[in-house]
Image (tube, one colour):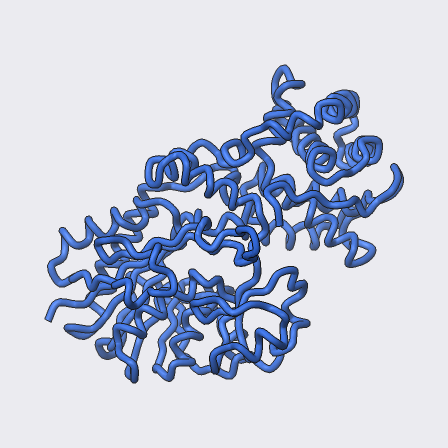
Length: 457
């Protein structure tokens, strides 16, 4: 992996690759103009009734996906180049022309697609998506982009590809240098991490050709379709970023080496943390408000041959029949720690309501402490890079409810990742941790915040 991945085109001429580009255009339009998530957009494009409903082969589908991911990861750089040649951005119906320009520029600047192929196929997409009136603009601007392609080598890629609100949040929290490192990490494709159901995972390192991480996860690069990997059908492992596995590990550590009893997993879907707790022998109740996401959780548990009680409910309204011996709350958040895997997140139209979301997070934490026995552990986590969804929530909740007592995490518990432990015992991982270095393919991790508490006795 490099900071500027480049990919050979799968099409060779003007008449090739139209279906893949139609798919990529539709997905980008759904994400950037309609605010859909990347997964939602791919699903919607697949169900569409247009000429792109079905791609010809897996190669076309992979090419469409790579074009989309390239544009989203490099959108800041792409727009910086386009803005040099646009007196004003197209508006109204012309927003589709901007999407088409971004798609064409992404191919020329970062995918080594010949300019004539990117340009001619862009014009073909314009015809099929009722943008024929913008063909002159698209053709002229893409020609200028091709002539200026070398200029991307001098761009500040790490800064440009982080929208202003995310750059500001990271720079204020960690300093400009670390914010720039985070931005650089977002440009690389995240590896695939697996949590092994039983054993230390060394057998699966050998079977899958991966590497053992100090956290116990197994890491793979270029894994392809996970459903085709050895062990998937047998339920020997599940996909879970190494950082995402930490909250359940810290809850189990607080419950002791022979952890037993009843625990809750709030906002549990899609179920990685539920699986960790169930695999440790605990009696788990998994609670989430989303029926479809809980269906996926049930499917995952069935594949893994693990058992948990699954409850669809509003977390703020749910109470167990008896107080729990431990609880994990992975609260809804901005998910800014997962941008490497979800490059659409920073760019979706409309953004997110910070005040509403942080109020919900604090409410959930204050509710959760009432669900555990006195002295029992409670872990709060978010996959966010922003202190307002982590450290600030903890500070506010501790001041408001004396029943909530911080249980600091020590570096002895996290000797495999001591840089994540703050002096106050809170845990903060960043995408820059375990990042690629010479001779080291570790490849980073998701950004997570974790705080552990106990209910006052």
